[in-house]
Image 1 (spheres, rainbow, N blue to C red):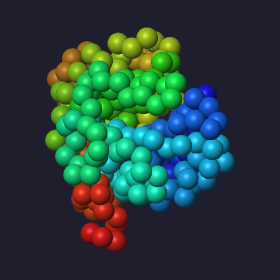
Image 2 (cartoon, helix red, strand yellow):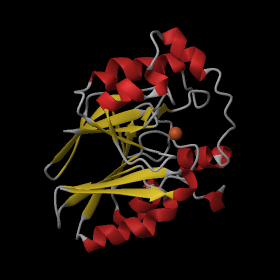
Image 3 (cartoon, rainbow, N blue to C red):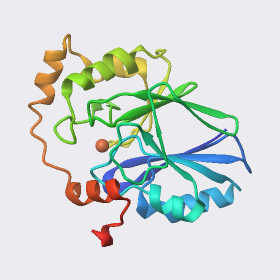
Length: 230
Ligand SMILES: [Fe+2]
């Protein structure tokens, strides 16, 4: 299997390029527009045909690469059905499967960071977007986020996956590339709570500054624009 994890420094975003092998169909999760050339280069080097691109949620800290990649390769742009993006080709439901050649992903609706956040399970690994981060969890204070929904997504969905499941998040700010469900359950400081209210208490008192690009990035990602077009 081809599994490339690329990092975008400005917003500490991870992007994943996935394919069952050289010369086959490929899928990209959470691409960043500025790195489009790099993705195309990886695809070319491995003779991959990009057929699907997914955003786990509407990103507030960078402009998505979905539209640029669609322009260049005609790939299908996918998000969960709660996405308010106007430029999505396919909106999928909870438990629905996304397939490319020899690869199958299952969508899991995991709201809380935003109301359009989905995770994607692929055999031994799960792409958690910003719902579950390594040693952290996504903030819940904008884009219709909810700490109560996040608690349910974390404790009743993601942490119920087999404990050896690998966790691949949409960001990491400390150089970590992946984790496991077991490791997060036992060590993630945000997950050492005993109730929804306790979790909400933590999340409602984070007092985080808004992401620098928030207003423009969300607009761009809802409408499929570049920063110059806003
Ligand atoms: Fe996010």
